Image (cartoon, rainbow, N blue to C red; front, top):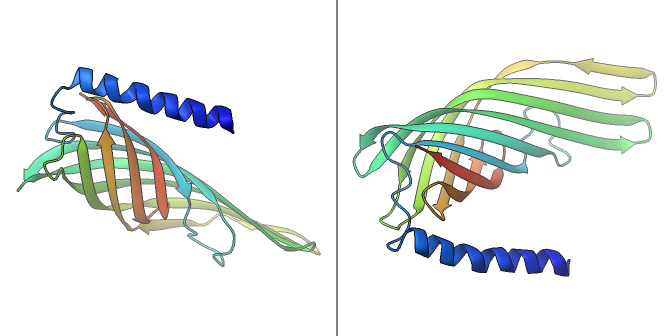
Amino acid sequence: MKKSAFVLILMTFTMVPTTQAAFPKGPLDPVKVGTWTLSVGCGPGTHPFGNGIGFGPAEKVVYEAGLWDLGPGVITLGGETAFSFFSHNFNNDWKERWANFFLGARGAYHYGWDVEGLDTYAGLPLGIGFSYYTHDDHPGNHGSTPVFPYFGIFFGGSYYFNKYFGINGEVGFNVTYANIGVIFRID
């Protein structure tokens, strides 16, 4: 634990001088027309089916491209893919498991608030989901594989330490309730 804390502190202190040397006035405006971003995050996944009991981790990869200026912000379009897994044991005789895969499109409105390196956004995803569901009861094993549409809403923010790298967080109801990760800007 002490070693992890030391590494985190060391990374923090080395990152600040690097950012200041690369961008004396701060990182550039993160999202504008022509900007491409790729983010990877993880967090608690949503339950597309089932009883909502249990915790399931989810991993999500998002790609977006800045396409249109709209007022002081930018509209982006892109795609997302995600995977989540849930498991719950009611007792020795009954277990449920869900493995979910999502693939969809998303659109968002990004606004920087005149803060160097900060990007905030809100948007809507729309796609298709696949869920492999199994449950064990005393007589045997049962399963199904439903296919379903998914949609939701999300609110997020990113902070770029330099022109190409930052941290990202998102909340809402989509593939995850909340997720945190890293974001890369691709020019």
